[in-house]
Length: 334
Image (cartoon, rainbow, N blue to C red):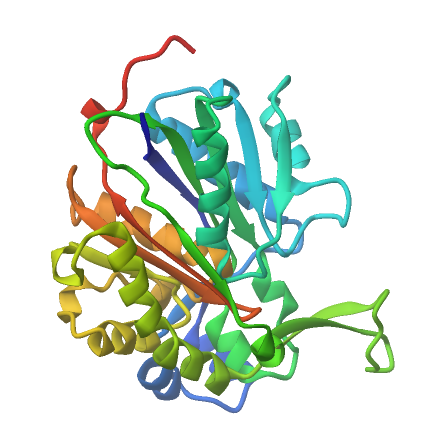
């Protein structure tokens, strides 16, 4: 059998930070953020809200939408670059908070924004092994906590959030296609997180984690490398880009998402945009966007959707997913 996405769960912080609030703190304007980035709001975790809290909420939401108990999963994978602690894995804390016993869990770190696709591929392969029948892949980050305190652009762009793919075997559908992965190490410095000590000096071992990002470099990468990569992904899937119902890409910012879809020669209504109100939530952004498409009726069983992720590394990934409905998932006693 193939592997399909049974459901997607989403969890974002309740705390909303609007453009107006940022204007009070930085030398910027609502017009600049809306016109340049396409963002008017973002969700930011509170001081007592951890990556594991958002991840748990996403897992519970995915299971609720599938009508199943979180304890029924066979494996939990968490993709994050902002763990609660360096060790143990955030997956262990999610399992603990969910009171799930006897289920293995581990973390993967795919370098931030590309994680929504890298993690899906990891979960897909574990499902294909035949050892697991239901795998939860949670992609969660509190990346806004890493913003440079003085960088107005980072505060305008980034938000916190989590999403969860619930994977099961499916029938009468190709389900999740082959995921292609790529990394360009020459662009390693385009987006990274450094540790800075109290004197503002680089410290490899301790100190505050602070994002360093070349926004123009990210844009150039997305618009120069990703289009050619899309051709490779669709060719591998045996499908034409015109036959794809939607293009769901990492939400670097709404303006870049729309520019990319246009550069691909596709109509604007194929784009899915959620960063306008959630900001760039790193790896979970593409998963949140996919959930938005399903919940607003833009996806129906049998539709093909192109998923794209790109971020620090610079790493990138893509796959074509054939959307499944309830009829595609065989009944199983859990």
